[in-house]
Image 1 (spheres, rainbow, N blue to C red):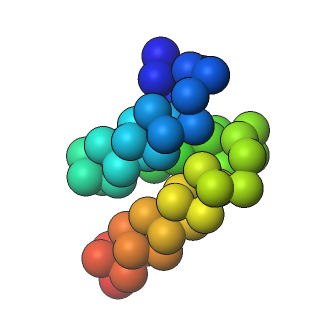
Image 2 (image 1 turned 90 degrees about the horizontal axis):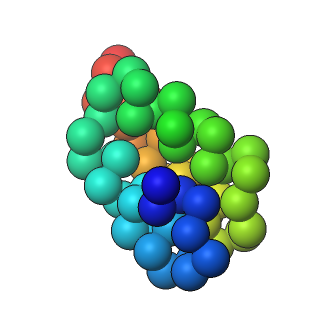
Length: 57
């Protein structure tokens, strides 16, 4: 799974793909990545979660 790859750039691209999918299971994976990853990936996850939460309002 790309979220577990050693390359932070690949993990950020996986986060972007999940953000574009925007399904409930993709959001769960984003939340997992936020809890488990480094600061740069967490920042990308946070941005997607903010965007997705605004779309569902």
